[in-house]
Amino acid sequence: MRTFFEHFGKIFLMIKGGFTKPENMRVYWLEFMEQCNDIGIRSLPIVIIISLFIGMVMTVQFSYQLVSPFVPKSIIGTLVRDSAILEFSPTVTCIVLAGVVGSKIASELGNMRVSEQIDALEIMGINTKSYLILPKILAGMIVVPCLITLAIAISIAGGYLAGLFSNILTKQQFLFGLTNGFVPYNLFFAMVKSFTFSLIITIIPSYYGYYVEGGALEIGRASTTAVVVSCILILCADYGLTILLL
Image (tube, rainbow, N blue to C red):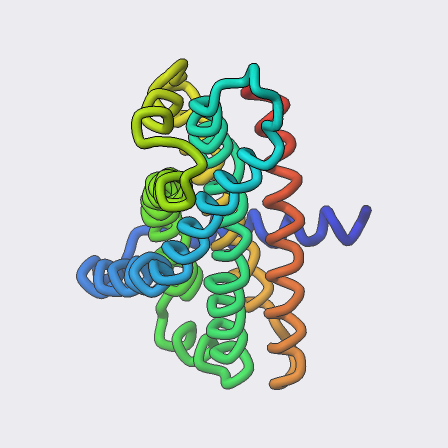
């Protein structure tokens, strides 16, 4: 328990130290845009591939489970839509991003700490928390919800293609199920989850990378620990938000 509060306090102080007035807004803006590119654009291929196959697999599995002739096939479109919005797209995508983005952030900051680049920046009078960590957090808060929105659309499109090309259901049946009984609140719930997960994906790896001590071996351990802790916290937050908001 003491270790938990120690980590929590250091994370709080790290974030608090990052919210200071930038010395040079242009430099910070360039760093922010670079992080948006790293977290968002470079993660697009894996997000697209995962989302497409998740939607396709959901359609095939739902058609396999719905064996009763009394259940209309259009319900498959409804199940794909709700499953993609409520759970699969936000949670699975963010777990993948925790591995891709989180390991990069932790190893990048850890390498800077071990090679004393962070110490050099602090000697120059630069607030390293606001210059190195805050742009990552802000970029994640903006880019990750955009990636989740795209993942939802691609998952639904993948489900549509799988149903169409495998003759599981017709275009009209899928579109009817897709639009039938839609609840806009579900999209709000997905955005709340993606916003919360984006904080976990950026803050936890930044913490483990920024405070790493030792050499190359410790950087690898910090990167692995950051990914594991981020994934566990994402699952815990997923359960907590589901209980609170649904």
